[in-house]
Length: 464
Image (cartoon, rainbow, N blue to C red; front, side):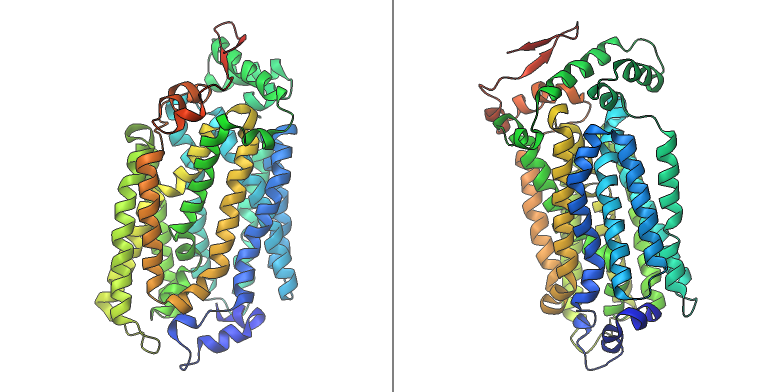
């Protein structure tokens, strides 16, 4: 929004309206990139504190802390008088993201029945896409309110912040979390409530036994590095890196800027961003339906082909039509670019978007789950920060080839999925070691000769 740029980034506004500036370089400003990416750097730092609160205070209280951070961050952003206030607000929102991303996927994985765990966990990502769509709609509406529309836009984030805080006050903590903290009877009562039956003894015994193992672990982060935990750690870290190198955040963060760069006028660029947000939401529904039917691997591999082809097509069209000085895409080519971006966004939304969070949350054992989720969130936010901080500069220097850069990464990650990612659909979390890791052609070598625990039908632990 010009009003926002005039207030905080006047140099960017000047470049935006100068004809002599390269189309690809209009928004290349480190301050603007820092405003966007400071949120992710803060989230990265907050993750380490969130790991402690998730384990010691529970998943529910961690979500409550996240809500408070969001509310305070919104107040700073909505009332910002200078760039410092704006960035402090972004940092507080980042802390909220660090705590929420730590607690929510764990909460969903632990509370869900095994048969619908994938679909229920993807509701997390579905609601993220709903948030993106609403944010785009709010921006589209408030862009017409001069000169303070941007304040209203940033302030309206207080609505979901308030809902998260209120929701955290009313939900129960997970049975796993309650049992892990020694509240066995509370854990059993919650398990009966969420399963809708009194016959929960086998599952309760499994959780109790897994909890005993977890309590033996005094240094969960150090334990993550043990040989038997290496497959889960490697996959969790690489999934987060690959998720960011699909280029999705670059496109979703800067969709209005990107469309503006390609010659769309300001209103049209925001409208196009709303379209991609809607596609993102609808495609995530596909994942909710199919993840527990066709499996994780199939969705990731299909999406790899779709993302690669759409990004190559965008690179070719931009390479031919958009030069440094000329941005006359033409009506037909402009529609084609938006369609290709939508095809790309849809394939990401039913694959790398939700599954990048689902797979790590369901593969770590209980004793390393909180630490593993912490590393997952940390790596995700680190590489989100790297891409957010670098994207506008990369767009300036690589120009249309930036899409070729991301498409090359899509090939790499698809090959990794093909050869190294095991299928985890319909496998209970407590049985991952036996049914997944010990059966995989590559990862099984990390399970050999390492003591592990099996829970028998009475809930006692046998070490073999």
